Length: 86
Image 1 (cartoon, rainbow, N blue to C red):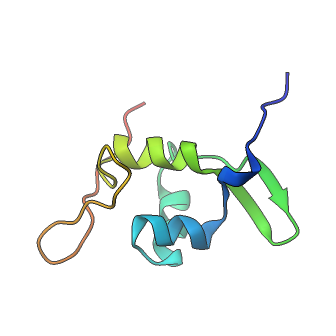
Image 2: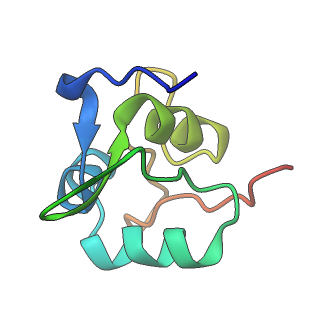
C-alpha cells in the first residue's frame, strides 16, 4: 500500500536547511554521508521532496534537533553531529 503524504509537511532541501539552521550544502552532505538520512517521498519538478516528520525524527535521533524540533547548537554555533544508529 502506498504511503499517504500530508502535502503541508512536504519539504525540499531549502526548507530542511532553514529548519535545521544550516546551509543547503550541509543538507546535501548529510544526504551523501549518512545512510540513515531520510529518503525522498516525492519527486517534484523542482527536485526531491521529503516528509518533514521524517527529517524531524532524524534530527532528534542524531542530536541536531531538540525534542521540540528546534536546532541544537554547541559553543561556536556548530550543530552536534552524531552517527545514526542502525
